[in-house]
Image 1 (cartoon, rainbow, N blue to C red):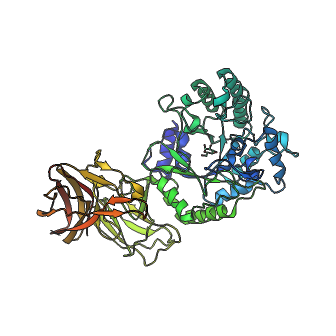
Image 2 (cartoon, rainbow, N blue to C red):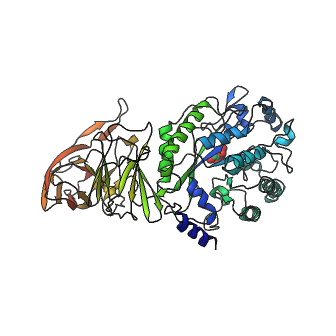
Image 3 (tube, helix red, strand yellow):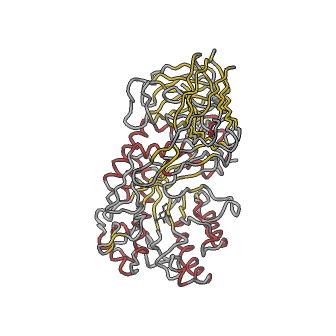
Length: 598
Ligand code: GLC
């Protein structure tokens, strides 16, 4: 019934959607929102990554792990609360920052691994209510602020790991042992009642963010305990989302709302099931005094766009200090993202993946939004082309209109469209500081011409084993090694054929070059034959010798070099198949890297 109503509303008001199949109506707001704020704030924030002068004992420098890593006694750990400046702490400021950053939801660490509840919990004495003079309840304050400013509230709750409770999990228990009964005591007397409090006392909770990054079978937690927890959430707040770090596999329980990727792992394939990347602006989640690997605003925007172009979300973390302040470096980047989203947000909110293969274009990423019959594609230009032209390959429908998203007047951009190729004339300079976006409107769903190699930014075509009509899946495709000084290549030990497809928009001559490594093991040379447009080029490979990666390191590698093959005349605009055969002599091989045509 609800579905029918949304369908009716869609027809009535033309609400925009994109083509991502939702797992449930619950996730609709989430896949529309695309961008949220993660907040790691707790007792650890006052340690700032140091305990008694010593830096946190782990390379990964996650400041919120200091309790465990530096073996701090539970009673001593809470003395860090003396450093908190309660007069200054104002969670509403975080929510306002999220709003100004263009984020649509906030996920707050209500209880992190240290086991300390940042609300006035009735089920544990290790909580803010018992440790602050004037009883602060940060969950309450955040819930009110989110309501006031129109953002959704999610809560991070560390269910598996709890370093404070006698029977909670910490990795040391691998040595001391813990019985299932003991662990269940922690579960029943802390996890379940605290979750009940969080889901009862603070109005609508839109998401519970669990944090078990391995499957429950590798932990002390049982499937039954996780089901009990999930059932409680579904009963108390049926609209609340649950992330996949709950710890159940999809086979055991398909009723998890979205997949949470690993820390700072961005998406790399299009998925229909909702998913999200948790990510940091620098490195640590909790505030860390000497963490300074700040990602640039452009990098963060590219992360967001990358995920949206594959149907995913980005949950970007802030680690406020013990006085509530958010480090300036974070604020600045978030506000810049917000300004960008004010102008370009329609390419992100409610947008999703388009059906062209990812990374087909070397200039950036495409997102897609449907509005009734109409479809708008958003070309996010990461690298503004020097020749002021944007080449779009693979869409055979002609766009109605194109404009720069930053241009309020929507002045039409000039473009030509031929076959499966659109060429857009760009204004002189890149119009925005960060990523500039071009909107292209189509009257219906744009049709795709499958399997094409895209025209590169500079006008050439890059033919690789991986972008053939049928992508290669072979053990002879050898991954790059030695930091890429040995590039990825296809090892040719017997005659092999490669086939690509292109759309040529302008008739004329193209020169073909090939990159390979040939170490000359026989009296005969490998033969390379390329055929297209009823013409044929045939050449013999030349030895390419060795090269050196780094000095004084015995870093001697097979050299790959570019060799001219010849020219082909393409008599008319249209689709062409390029076929290449490489025939190595017996007991010899050639390492094929790429073909370049321009
Ligand atoms: C890891 C860490 C944790 C952090 C989380 C964020 O699971 O244990 O400290 O909260 O990742 O994704």
